[in-house]
Length: 449
Image (cartoon, rainbow, N blue to C red; front, side, top):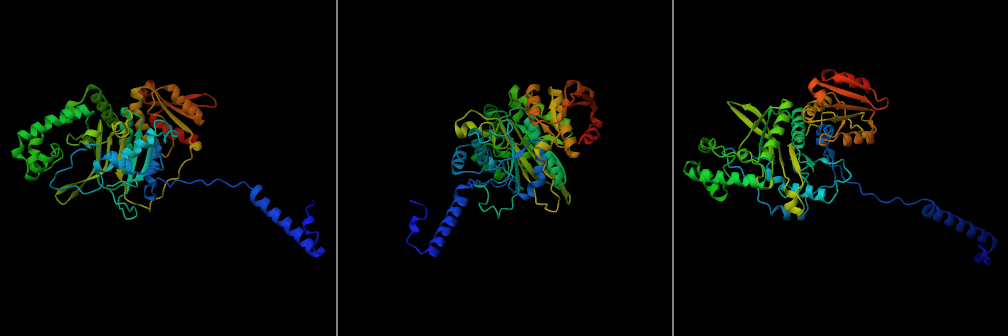
């Protein structure tokens, strides 16, 4: 049967119209069904960085932190978090009201480690260094309506890295962001180390025994709090309690040699950067679920005749969260949370595409690593973007990463360069190497841009 036989009984004029209509319908079907392949619907994840944090994001990116979308606190995270024993709440005469309480972020740590053990971060450079705006959706400690929530929290995490350099990097990045973007007076890093669960348990036992002997000298509210929680007086600032705290046991006295060495290295990094810090023996973060370094960054301003202290950032290691929450082995992890107020009048730095970054920074040896953070900060101030893998120790893996990124220049800081206060610049195309003094490095690199 021919294509037109169905219209054979129609008048010639009507038959012509029917044939033309059939052709048009056929063309319409082909053009919309067969000629053009329908594009799959791709669900785009929302930007994990709030607009008020774009400047903070630029500083975080320089040190290797990348925005990570898709994080949220789910019901199972909240259930898991309830199974943890958390540290004591503050008992002070001038209670600090605010969002930066260590106990407010346990649910987020559970969420972040869930994403890590489920390999949701496998596409990132390892070990992953991520950042995001907060508080995370679903965090039960904050207003569920995020639009009404006035807390502008910027968070950073490093996972899978147990080395002291990870602690130093997150502390320095936090300090740099606050120094550049928050006008709150003089900043001070307060830091402590709790060791692992066994270390902290030994400290807590001796500390509670000490205060039981001195219970009669405590302020009245602290006596009641102490009966409910033996660690409640750790950060108390009542005059009566302060008088007996000096002789109380300190967490660092119960550290194992491993944790003592780790803490010593963290302090060396901070000192190499000339950052102001003190060891705050009363800073215990979240207590038993935390492990190792705990810190906060405070600002001091003079109000009348008194100094006013404001906590702008907190951070701690939470290595044991993964094992207790998800039954996996401990995942080395450290997180930090910063209060960043909106300053939309400031110009947001332009994000540099990965392929446009021309330099890869390589270090060799502990002395070089110690000096590397100060050089990274020099480059940040000069607005020179650079790739780095400070968490890696092997030269082969660092060079392999640099070659994979196809950067034209490698900056090498080895033991020799660390002693001579210089950096070797290798031109990858010609393999020519030049040794440049650190004080001349910025000028030299700017000519290569």
